[in-house]
Image (cartoon, rainbow, N blue to C red; front, side, top):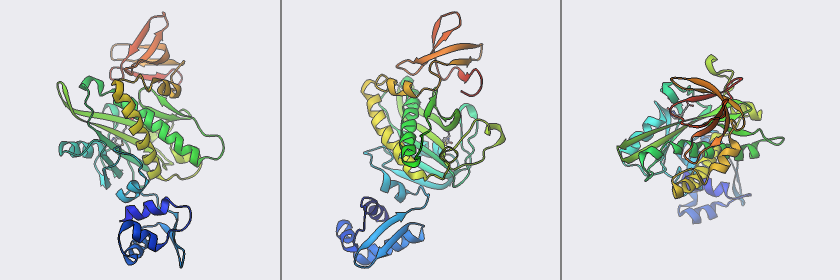
Length: 333
Ligand code: BTN
């Protein structure tokens, strides 16, 4: 009921009468009024004017199921939402939901994580009220060795979704949203988003894939170790940003990009977009592997998501995300 009323209020520029809402939702005008009162108590600024009806002026920065559902315009991505005020890790929750049979596109979102996980066994700082911690459950019918590409599909979607939000938020020059291969999202050379993809599979069959995304939205301070390399939307825009519209925008892009990916089961349909956002392209990078570390010139990605680098002796190599990490020669990018 809250979701339907929020949707109606958001879908209208002016006022919607109690009568109209009652007809469209099939509940009494008293029930409509009571729901509006509850929304007001939760921090939604809903004006109620006699003989005109209701109008939404502003809403709180929350990521509740109702708030997210009222903003979501997708068919499957983020259609089934599970929200936690606090959880250990949304990746663990999504994985469990997957084991219990939750549908493709299920989205687990938390306001705070107590055991947020990053790539390479690192932890992901996850305080309350300031960032997005979310994980999407996917059930792709592809061989397990192709699942790693979903990380790049998400990187593309997060970058596009965030760029769309910045266009709404920033009146002057919009900061460039870029991807540091394979899947960090960068603004002004600093990390805004991290992505962690995990899979439950058999040798030749994927049970499900969890793509976890951490977006620094309103953080203004970071732990010492990342204080020089991390940023947030708030720091880049100069003002606070609401989190739910960012999630809805990323889900909308994910749905479109995933469908493109599934047509060929590779990145050929997304390469142009991805490459145009790739911060490493045409730059000198340091490739750090287990056995060797060398400097090379990054040229782009292959259709399976490897980074194409040219070594100083002219030889070209395609490097795999799982095997090496890439740094800029002069710093993080
Ligand atoms: C990285 O190291 O860059 C990846 C960070 C991924 C963090 C997100 S936050 C939501 C989801 N839940 C987790 O525990 N991790 C991912």
